[in-house]
Length: 116
Length: 111
Image 1 (tube, helix red, strand yellow):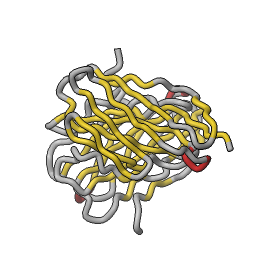
Image 2: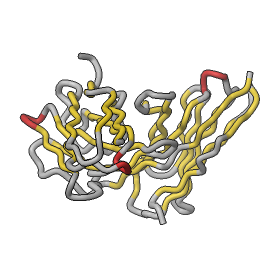
Image 3: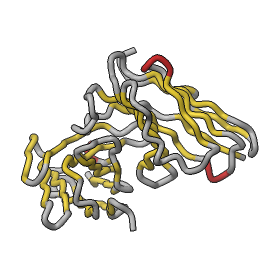
Image 4: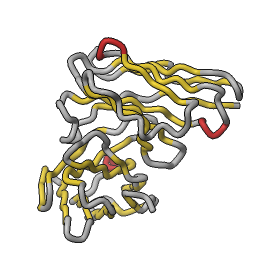
């Protein structure tokens, strides 16, 4: 597709369950980011992938959160043993730049996670 | 203290007014400064970016960066109802592994 695609768009789960969120970046984009946006809040950085380099995981809030990027393309964010405070919109973005430092992030529409 | 501070608003102004949005930051390593616009239930879209200090103009939008004060601004001239959205500042350093966002300012332009 032409843009960043995220799935599912909405996910309701019970506390304690695991969830997987998927991101298909724009073809050819080397950088991929995950952010979390809680209601009325800004974007909280979670993790950044750049090519074959080791990902920057410094924003992951706990060891219940993990992410992988297969073949330099699709990425999956996994949240284990979900808690109610994990409820948020999870946004994925990709960038065509080698270092991503021009700020040209292209965002998907997000996966809205609700933990009951 | 957050690395990037932004007044969440909401800010409501009449159509045609000049809007001023601002962010302050604490990390002197930041060199790239951006403004994103986010409509409700959509992902943010890049509006403007600048490198280091100075001004950049694009149509009705002007971005200013003052690195000595660690302060950035976005001005919107002749504001339109279609400008109603949340505006997020963002910035990164030369290593550029992370782009840090402000909390966003919700703007409403009254017809």
